[in-house]
Length: 297
Length: 335
Image (cartoon, rainbow over all chains, first blue to last red; front, side, top):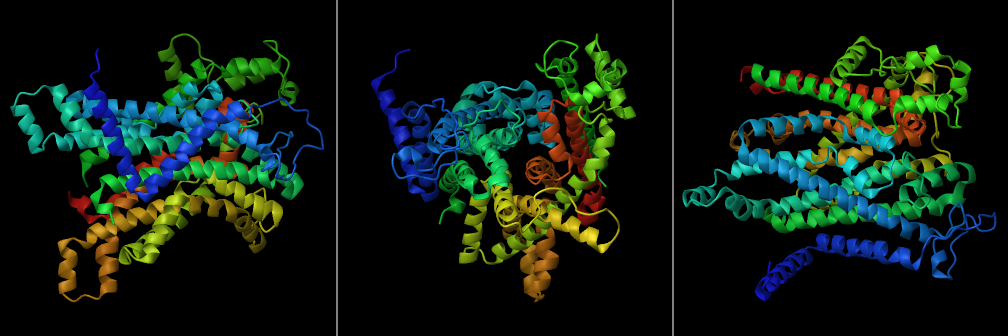
């Protein structure tokens, strides 16, 4: 397929417009900048600061922060690796899992919601019922058991487990939005004009629900981080010392024995996890503010 | 009472339970870490080195058979699943390999503590959230409202295990203000000392769970009140000159509360998930901590049993909520 120059320009202009809109909200701007920082850290960080095997000795574990070299700003962990190196190498996992899970849940939820809302009848009844059943099951508990049984560090598989019930909320709300939208006059006009079902679906209905889908995407990213870091925190996945959740867990067990010496191993990963999740929530909140006129000040 | 609606809700509850059993059966039969093989390996029957001393002391073949009787069903998967359902119904939920006890016995011992902290935390967070939401709605746009909204936005994005970790680190390990493990000290008995020690031990877990969840109630209550305030009957009540506190309680509050009622059950399910983290961090003897340790030890029967019992709790809660909804909402009674 040939892509014309004008089309590329149109897409670029669209992206530019979206970015300008995001920029106009303080919350979304904050979220986007922090997110960019994390993406940079995960992309470049492990190349600059690779994990090197260290010889653990009593002299280099639990070192307090040092001003120089900069990788010692957060001190060292319980095996003597600078905490900065741990954090940087733990970042790709968090980002991969959150992005992949959000992708899975969004695609599946959108698909199920569109089919249920657009087809109606038995398909709708069956899909809605399945969504409601899965919604009632406490997802975190199910995810814990499945992740432990399948026991993998592979972000693709792990994200699949994490999104096992996460798509239901989106599916149900997309369905109800489509059901409501089908009665709108302009959709009726399109139908009378004889436009095809797929045209109405992709050109008339989908653009209206996309902002909502994006918010859901970001919230699912947040939910996936909650579950994935939590699984490492409980020590239920194959152990990685540099994983943020595992670091927090380590800090607690060392804090119980050594008191204040493990403080940095607790606080630094906590700050990094928290900042990431706050950024995601602020971004979602900001987009909501932009598309929902009632929230505008 | 709307009978068809109740039947549909009951059907949903039954289907949820059925799906839960199905998932657990499929995991037992087809998961890459087959629980039966795992336990055989542990026993040294399939080769492999790690052998649980607990099992060796009990190491008779009868014991494995007893353990596996609930699950070891070969052949036709449909018949196998039917057998599994019958076993579950009859109370044969398998044996814990780590404790050497029936799963249901262990659950009966640990579940009350979890219900205690989860239910109290949800009650506290519900009431705090509702009152906070009321305050925010009547002072909307003000400094307090904005500050609380921003606070809740940031607070809800922080996972519950981070609160738990920070609280136990500082209040437990550093300053020794609260106990760091267990549910009580001394001998159990119905006296003041025991009860205060139970409350003292449960204080941090309950606070953590409640703190992690009250924001949701506050924001929904705020939204509901604002939309109820626009209703005609509120304007009419104001025009009749009713005292505003009366309107706030009997007209606005009650109607704004109704949609929250069914959300309690979903919140309960989320809290059970949170309880796993909170109980593990505070070493609280509830099923949450038991679930985490059983999964860590490959004690699959116990882990699955806990998952099933918590799903059952949520499903039963849903049915109770549906049945009692007509008590607080007169509109459903005639329907």
